[in-house]
Image (tube, rainbow, N blue to C red; front, top):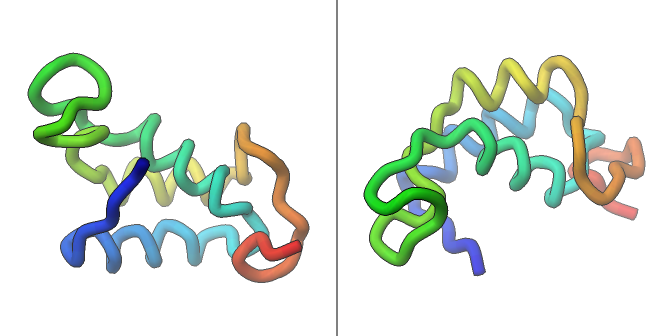
Length: 79
């Protein structure tokens, strides 16, 4: 399960603001795929998915929602 730290909340909200119609699953996938891996390769118990790369994630979101479980087009991806 993903956990959110206070240090991640602001960059994540800035990334999501690029495409409010994207689902939370699409946001998570974008954040995971753009994170800088730290510690053991892939997700680990010490660093999770790694260090948030807000600029890279925001750039990806600005291009579109990308893979995920589908955005509804409504703010926040709500159905």
